[in-house]
Image (cartoon, rainbow, N blue to C red; front, side, top):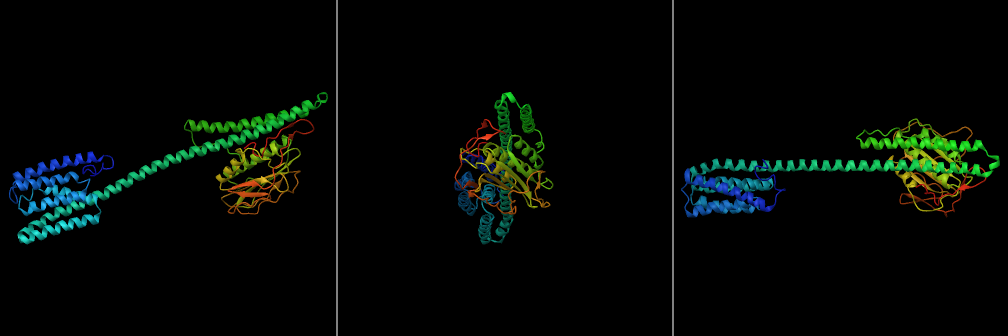
Length: 466
């Protein structure tokens, strides 16, 4: 209906093409009305020169029916009113009059259509009944056509608005789908980048330290070579490589599945059950690590994976930057509402240096599950990473279970709820969502292997793996 009446393409064509289409319509209507005036003679006399002039002028007004609907209709009324008053053939201008009335109804509000239609009917009936009852009765039959065209125009207008809203919603939904697809791709790329960073930084750091240990053992006293220590260092390197290769294979499988249109499977995510392996790997690099870790019962997979990566990055930074003789403490606990992760060391703290991606990645992982992370130098010395990860559902209250031979002491776990912000550890200063060291930075020290000998140089700053 919209296309047949010429209103379906209004937003897709220019003004010149609209005028050309309406001029063609006016010419067709003029031919039909001229044929009626010349052949039927049902009511009124045949038009003379003035009548033809008024009839043609009424059709010229239709040329502007979509560009200026109301002025075109008023111009048509100004031509048709004297035409009917002079008693020319009353059937001749019927088509052009109904077309103009329909146009006003389509392009205007229902209230305007009601006012225009009521005015036309009122004026026509007043004039006709003034000429006699018979004329008035004849005019009443014409009012039905006027009402019908007004109703049709209002219906087409409402249908057009509904159609436009449907099209707009479809376009918006398509844009939303495209934006959602782009967002998912960006999130997946960021997730893979974080995984690769954590995996490679952790593995390469451990391999570097373990290699330094092996080199030190070989060079310390060649005459009294400790083959057992060398073999253990090499075994640790081999185990670290195997673990890194397995995680890297899992990540690459995700990329290949996405490339070939595979499903959403990402392989098994690391969790709290993998934290003891991280602790063991850090110990194999010569770092003293104490741990108190909760069981993974009731902890959502996503929260466990975020905690695993935070601990992994924190241990990597501690191995690289804590300095010789530092002790690292890993505490994980829950109170039924949040998983609290605390990794501290008593090393050199934060020596400054260029920023990287490690600490940023921690905060991103915590935000992905609705949690918070704070990092910074402690007042009593050393560095701390403190994270609060909401569980989403209530789980049994679990306190840390110390490993055999591990001292039961250590820093107290958090006391804040998951809904509240994590407490700022001593020596921390909040700054725009990040945590800044409030004390002076210390100079970096070397991270040695067991026993005397050469050491692995620590990179400046706690963000060397960032």
